[in-house]
Length: 258
Image 1 (cartoon, rainbow, N blue to C red):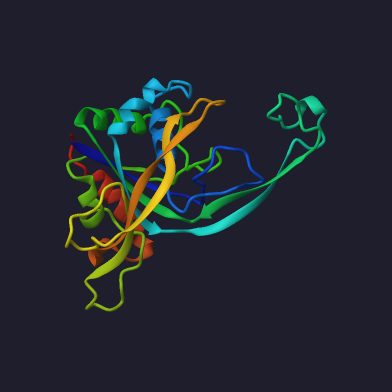
Image 2: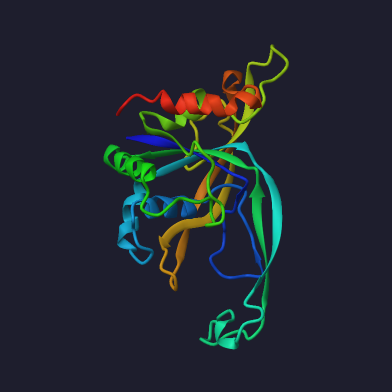
């Protein structure tokens, strides 16, 4: 097993928790497994209707470090106004709305997440190559939300979860108090930490974002369990915000060839 590291940052991102069209399109407070698996599949050119092609991603384990949770933003939208009926929004019965549909869409503004993707070595290599040169471009939950660079921080890491604790620069200012050696950072894990370890106490949350099918008219998901922890991270990963981009680029370029 090995893995890679992604940094999900940008002006806006939105991680939908429901596939059904609702008046308010909500966002989760963290990247969903459905969205990340969709990103991997898109990068590899897997078609939406290829349910069998999703099976390999069941081997992937995701760990999310929440560098900055972002601010919730709600945007006002209208769909289909001023058009003939046949060009307005469709209904479930096969007709059209014949009027503008008003929706509100939620986003996370200025959020930053770092994701450790752990998988068998051959799948890690495939994902790394695909994300470096994707078939379809990645986005942060919606096509209108492109990621900042650097996006793919490391293409091959022996222990990507440990890198979140010890290696990846943190989007947070370094504490002014020199006696403070660690910062408390939130993590979302798909398996619990060993009892007695730092940050082992966890909030257990249930989410319905395990993708079964991305078919346009047959999307399906199942549930999974997440363990939300607050863990100590070395202060050396933080630093002045003016040097953050330089530190991220240096970290990315320091990767040894796999």
